[in-house]
Image (cartoon, rainbow, N blue to C red; front, side, top):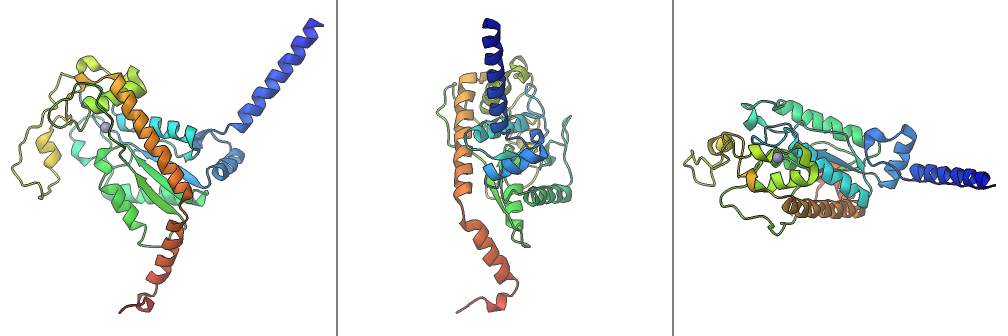
Length: 291
Ligand SMILES: [Zn+2]
């Protein structure tokens, strides 16, 4: 009898966990079956994330894929709170300023735009009518708004949103003077929170991340070599002062920001309508009312 009760209990437990496994859809595109994918797109209300990283040196102590690892960590945790379908690993961004360092993958400007356009087109063809590019790489901050602007060049039946940055976090670690822009205290702290096993904190002082101040130009004059002029080691700041506590606070703030973005995008019914109106008017501008 005891045996039978145990057997029935086991059957019930297995059945319950199978139902649970079926009802909990993965948010990762590559983990879904074709059938589950349809359900996932419906559950996400057509909202998909494209976490955008890069492959570049990160000082002497962080992995090449730091931006990709961190932005995917954030996207995956955000999607657990507010469901969205997440596109697989994407790293074809703007990183010419690190071409002199080992391990950098820097595709041509044409390919960067073409690949991104075909990627979002393919996402949309598969039901992602709202694509949120979640940016994890500072060097993309001109590319991505430009990409979003180019969506007005010709009609699309979907909307591209670009998300980057998050509310500043109260500093837990000791504040350092000078720029902390790349593999420094902040980014190293974040990586300690997301992938501690990949951080080589003991190597953080093997190179200098200090600003070399080699260009004497006013702030309102831009030149592409500015970054190399200031940070030739592709390191900005001092990673040795990083703490996991700081990283956890910062990453949580970033996750919260992405959750809010997903909710806002799901609720946005205007962008697609206005795009349609704009494309239609653009095809015959002389009919647009003027004074
Ligand atoms: Zn980075």
